[in-house]
Amino acid sequence: MGSLTANFPQSKQDRCGWFQPTRGVCTDARNGNGSAWRLVLLGAPGVGKGTQADLLNKKLDACHLSTGDLFRAASKEKECDQSPAMRAAMEHMRRGELVPDSTVWEMVRERAGCIRCSAGFVLDGFPRTLGQAESLKRLMESERIPLSAVVNYELPLGEIVARLSGRRTCEKCKAVYHITGNPSKVDGVCDRCQGKLFQREDDLPESITVRMAAYERSTAPLIEFYKALGLLVSVAAVGSPDDICGRTIEALKHRP
Ligand code: AP5
Image (cartoon, rainbow, N blue to C red):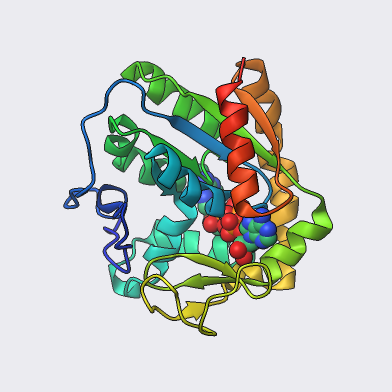
């Protein structure tokens, strides 16, 4: 699989190890104090996982690791630098389908250092199938690293579609906006890095329908999987992003 060098974010959390696993050294990697958070975020496409992962990163200092961001960075690579598996992955993603487990797992396994990082992590968009969840469980058990919790965000479908169709993303730092709910100060320009904002290809209506069906079929069963492991924390994804983040932190503090 080709290395992902295009467009990696430059923020408080640079995620170099995640975007450049063979060469990247995170400038904000810290020595853990044994209390790092290791979270998985679950929820339908557009429920706000990326937005919450970003906020949780600031509050809990745990790195935001998104597999969707990895695929979007790979799609910016020259086609000749992409492996056949990655080119196939891009096609699945454009149509709104899930990328095959083998490709996703190869990418995550290459980045196992981020899972081991003593600063902890917030996994956004992974795992997304029972096969991926089993692979992650095996990896973490073999490394003797326990997950802290799995947060499942819940929101009615109508609200989710409105969030997806109005989403705009910064091509440079990946910051996420919404044309009415969370607009940038200058239209089309990122507040953080002045990068250009774009609409994701998979946020068009035909892809949204396919993504929702893939979620119901493949990802929703993870709710029961993590409930059975005693890790599930459910949070209503209504209200402002800050309200939801506060609710998440409260739910994490009071988890069983
Ligand atoms: P990925 O990037 O993971 O997409 P997703 O899961 O579909 O989730 P989204 O990024 O669409 O939504 P989100 O929940 O993060 O919401 P956001 O915070 O942006 O994956 C994309 C594709 O990659 C997949 O379809 C698949 O093809 C492939 N892929 C990735 N990982 C894979 C895996 N593990 N296995 C197989 N395939 C994989 O918010 C949405 C909008 O709402 C934004 O505009 C935001 O500003 C707004 N918003 C957020 N919160 C609020 C709020 N509280 N109030 C109002 N607006 C809000």
